[in-house]
Image 1 (cartoon, rainbow, N blue to C red):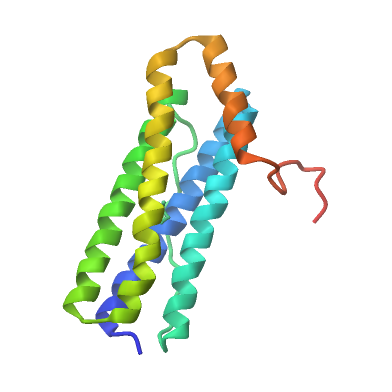
Image 2 (cartoon, protein in one colour):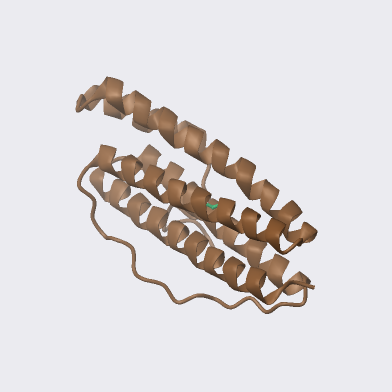
Length: 174
Ligand code: OFO
């Protein structure tokens, strides 16, 4: 059975993951209209992954006799300064998620909640991967600068990394 403290803190994490999902979705849409289709595909996929992170927590709460609640949240920004700035923002968002996961792990240790501690380890490693991925992209952007052909190549690369993304075209069937 989940403790009330852990349930409350996980509920806040659900809100954070839901916001990340909406944030990346908004960035994906902006990239799409700016002509960066590969990067948009990459970000649509990132948004889906954040939703999956949110759902995992929701199920963990419910499977442990709690009651997960769908959070109310602020709308994400609609437009962004430039391509580079989006990835800087993603890094900042992921760093804040990492800090939040680490404080949840600390709480699970204080509360001696081994189930929650075990569950949270997946997020600890996931955050290492996600931060590493965005730092790699930012490093490439440092090399590329504002070079148009360089950004074109990076956009292609991110599109390949995303692979096929279901529902990116209005023509995709439901
Ligand atoms: Fe990378 O934010 Fe979810 O966990």
